[in-house]
Image (cartoon, rainbow, N blue to C red):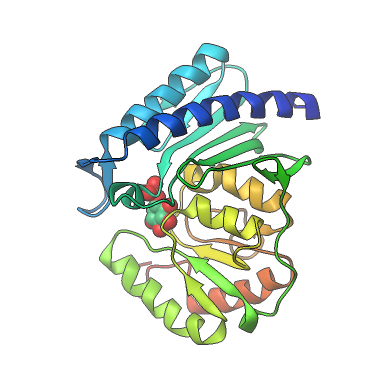
Length: 272
Ligand code: LIP
């Protein structure tokens, strides 16, 4: 389905309604939350709220748009006929959520013709609601977002994150060993979506991470892009699980070239 600016705004309005409700429910459930299950490793956790919030979002989307598809981190995989797909991360930053920390977010991206056309990242404990539509700009709580003014790599504050497997982390530490002395400093916030929104808001200059999934970057990559960042993988690829980089043009290329040379898109010589 091809979308007009009005269609995108209408889809965003639905996403915002649902993300606000989901964020409220998740925030109310944070105190005293415990681990319900684990995924790829014992530290890759799922809480009852990850599942309940994803189910709430799935139900709300399909109640309003029954012919759409829904893909979610916790397993939602509904295929509809409309050509519109909702990509959902009920709680990005689950470990922060588990530890009573502030930086976690409900993320909803809306895709049409294979492109993200609207996205919302709700970080309710921070009181931040980030939104964007394709071609329509990015906002936080209604205020227009713009990336920080350009800086060279050695003056850049760079956010990153780490995967859950020990092998991947060993390689990420190797990469960081070279990156850290070449930048202003590093931040590890614990939510990829909040990190990408941080670039959009000028609170960091750049962000990179290996191992993200479409629900981690979907909404937030559009927000970063609409705020003026370039968001992509290596060698012209779109954001992908091998590597996602976000930074204003110029800094993006500098960081890209450093990371490409370090094998930041691999798990090291033996890890592939
Ligand atoms: C997490 C990210 C975090 C990243 C982790 C993980 P989850 O998402 O947002 O920043 O480093 O690898 O992907 O598992 O909390 O939804």
